[in-house]
Amino acid sequence: MKKLIYIFITLIASFTTISTYAQTGKLEINVNNYIENVTIQLFQNDVLVDEYQLDFYDYEFVKTLNVGSYKLTLITEDSVKQTLKNVLIKESLTTDVYFSLPDVSYYNPNDTNITSRSITSAHFLIGNNFINNNDIFNTYYDFGFKHGAVDILTKHISIGGQIGSSMNYTYFNKSHSLSPLTEFDNEKYYYWNLNFTLLSRLTTFDYKRYGTKGPYLDLGISYNFPLLFRHIITEDNTKISTKRIHNYNDFSTTARLGYSMFALTLEYRLTNFLKEDYPEQPKIKIGLSIFFAVNSAR
Image (cartoon, rainbow, N blue to C red; front, top):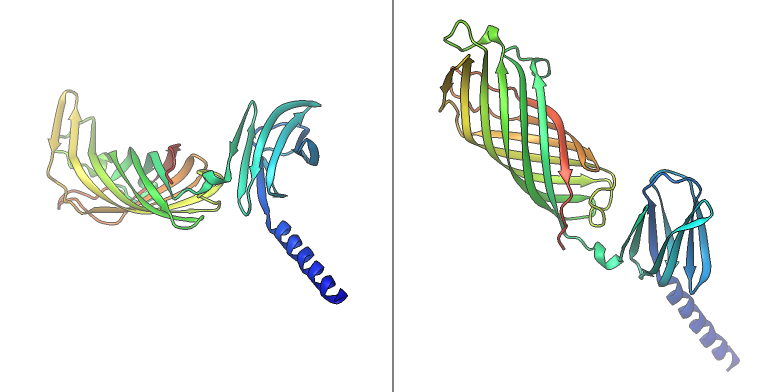
């Protein structure tokens, strides 16, 4: 009988230990300012549970805690700068706290179940004959914007699309001119298009929880519908404009390597889409894309 009681008590104690062990969650704290001698204190029921010393820019750490409600204080130079009460730790979930003096943000773990994110960007691309090994053109400029969204398949992989518009100016080298004039100011292609992009985004961070928190890579393929394409020659107040010189088969690929709201952008045209007697535009464009914060969807 004593053995049975001993076994029963042991089983209850083991079950209680396992249950208690399982009821934990994670607290992630980010300090986004350069602050010297930072101390973060963690309280539960007004009892100091733990204390952390921080001394790095954009420092972050993750702590596993028992489920419950906590209070956080951020101390610098022996004075309390921030206090955050009722920080909930839930089982098997991560709670985020961002200190960015004088502000503090708290994200309940229920707010991290993001299933899609909007992507809005503007780009400015440039190039020259050196990049494309093409002596026909001197320089070219391309600028535009795109808006769309991606569905988050895993925390690192997302697939979606963008719709946008861009304008392109490509300037001829005068030694390869198509101009009937012997003297003129400049010669260029002017191209305005509407583009549709199939996009995949690969992130080094959990994209379900963070919109921007580290490096990411966008890979896409686009169809560019010509709204307007002109070959233009100007001389003082005279302008010669030629239209209907394009086809409708302009496809390109895009790669964007980014961090936060900025991305190095490379675009490569896959097809030739101008009619005979007109040299194709340069295939390679490089430049910068800027992303704008847009609310996420669940």
